[in-house]
Image (cartoon, rainbow, N blue to C red):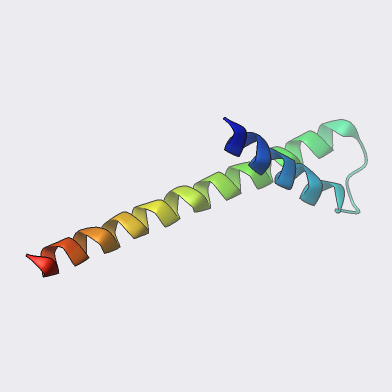
Length: 61
């Protein structure tokens, strides 16, 4: 839970740096988009690491 809050804070801070956002709703939507992209990327990275570990396990046998 704490990790998700940290990622949300990072996404929110990134959204604050954007110049074209004009209101709170846009800020929230942009923050959500950044957060979703970060979570998707993190999930993909874990999948890649698991595949890598599986291949290494097969080589060790």
